[in-house]
Length: 315
Image 1 (cartoon, rainbow, N blue to C red):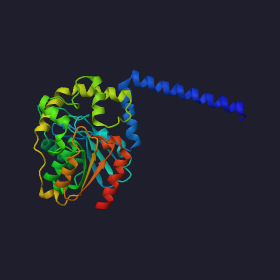
Image 2 (cartoon, helix red, strand yellow):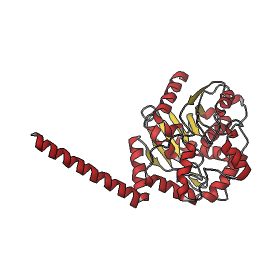
Image 3 (cartoon, rainbow, N blue to C red):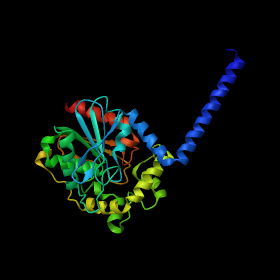
Image 4 (cartoon, rainbow, N blue to C red):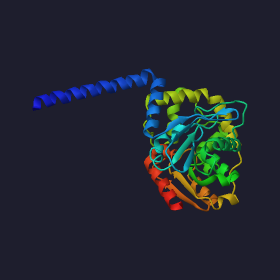
């Protein structure tokens, strides 16, 4: 190929690439719900995850599953869903069987305005789910509210839990001492409760130090779902806030735990890391500079590497 032909060929490729990019942008903007489903499905495929269906009394509880080996169950936080763990899962599925469910009241799980959604009640629903899909011992992880549920589950069913992975977890007085939660107690204002679709970006910003890439379509789809859930999530937030805080337990003494906290977490106070370190004598605490409330979303590779190192050390 002579130089003139190469230039022509390269220019044609650039034009084609620009046209494809423009088509993707238009698809993302003009058909956001369809584009969001396609984008999420692609992320799951990259991470080796498949959507499965399950249910507990009164609720559907779909979950993502992928990989082989010991079972690692991951619980999302308030206003989150199973896909909070999709990006980090690509670093975990080569080593473990990863399960990430939607908790009742969130994601694609069932909703019942008359049901209770306190931490102990959600822990019981987790037990019912695991009885079906992972009846033995599991390694259990959770972010924020999901970490609270994981620790509560470990106290109630220590024989079911091989280790804990707590990512900016709720459930201690220290972690609840943030300005966001103080403001919520005083006024009911909370960035995790979304009244208008355009407020969803503010929720993401409140939870992250630097917003990760999220297409317009995904922000739109999640924003619409959050608005529809506003009445129910307002009630669930009240029930979570009223749940008893975690207390020292004999069951915690021998349980290996990795406590991870973003140093710039604006939702739950970083002093919660030390509090969890005291609750779990066999814990390792990792503080992550430049990270907010969602380490597994903001720094998935680094967060996964810390977990893999922890598991090697506790084996």
